[in-house]
Amino acid sequence: GSTMAGSRALLVGCAALSCIIGLSIRGIPVGLNEVVIWTGRFILLLAFLTIIISLVSPWITSVNVQKDICTVPQEEKERQQKLLREKQQEQLSKQVHSHVENVLKPREELKLRKKIETLGKSQLWTLSQGCRLGEAEESVNICSDSDDGTESANNEAVRKRKLPEQVTKPLPKNELPKPTKVITLPEEPVEGGNGVITIALRCPSGRVFKRRFYTSCSSLVLLDWMMKLGYHPVIYTICSTFPRCQLEFKSSSSLEDIGILKDIVLNVEEKTT
Image 1 (cartoon, one colour):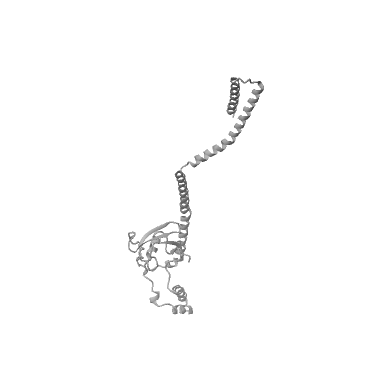
Image 2 (cartoon, helix red, strand yellow):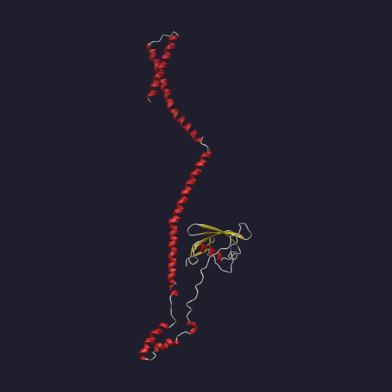
């Protein structure tokens, strides 16, 4: 600010001095009043020019800035936008993965464990030793009858309602346990072959698994595949997406028989009943 003011004052002095010298060279007598008048005129002119420059210079500067902004290549803008979108997508994917691993997956595992525990408790009666109909009552009544040597009415009723021997015959205790079922899926066919379709299973955890099958395969292969992925058929089932309906699986039905003739997306859902 001070430098510009000094430059302006120097410019005014030079202009006034050059005017006086010019008039003196031409032989025009220059008086003190005329010098003052001409000096004042030059100062006014200089002030007027300064005002014009101060008003115009911001506009010129803004136009130059806009030109500089417009000169940024369009490809550079697209590249920056693409990088920003990729960064946002990566952050979103990390959040989704963290939510699935820390919230959804433990919740599903806890729910499955509770279901299995409840199912196991409801079937504990099948593991008891048990006794034949009326056997417990008979043992108690025999002890009571041994005291008086007579058959009571209760014992007679128990004897009459005893089932035939072939019905109450206990099962042999040394039966071999049933072998554990080993899940084996058919070999995956080559993509694009005749009768080959691709089936995608969308699981409750949000993950999607894809596999190819022949349309002639048994429909039960889908349940085996679901169980191999960690979803037991006792708790989960497979439904179509639209319209939503639960698929019916039979050993005698193929994928073609239940309406799966082309590539399809199916949902693994928890049974409601």
